[in-house]
Image (cartoon, rainbow, N blue to C red; front, side, top):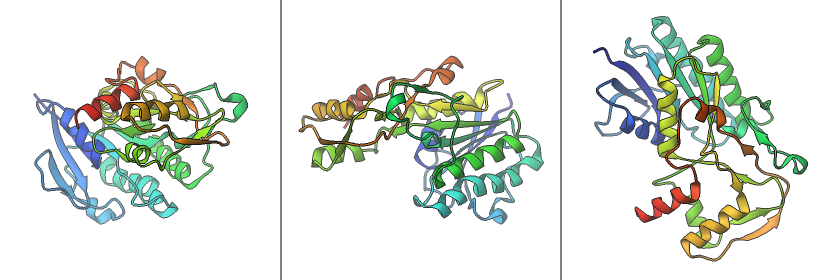
Length: 280
């Protein structure tokens, strides 16, 4: 049986993707500037910002999961990671004419917060995105390049806030009393467990006739202040202080992704955090 050959680009999320892929059906390659010393996949040392380092990629690559993280939250890093990195990678891969699917993992930051009057409105893939900051602009430019260069084969997966093993910043801020919760309408917490984010990537790698874009969340958006209080109760620490702020979030729907056949293992972030804490 001929295996699909997948190239995973990124850190923690791609490690979870590799762990869930069936090695009987997938030949797994990873690309990093500084590959780790592990045998979870075959490693390629390359830099997305350096086209020359991408010249000798395996010719048999048929699938790509693209999920690198910018080095910093500033414009140059986002431009390098998204539109520039995607362009350089496509320049190296498209001439082989073997790419069946390219999943570009981005963020729901491409949708601005809803205003107070529309706080209960659902945001889905048909909601217009806005390139109103350097992060959303870079992600949308990369998506546009992907769809232009690989029509019908490129898929954007816009993820909500990822949590899971090793991602403890919210827990630490609650325990230290440093977290300030937003109060008022239009504050939504949209999350996805990293195992579910990985399974969504794998689902889209193999989905026939996909749409060009999917929202990746657990489908259970919650009021941010209420979520912080529920998580504080779970941790047995005091509720965080809160203050009234303009809307900071949006109520995201994962109906398209679920309708395509994907099901999250953790459809409720509080249950996911409870399991994470129990596992230590």
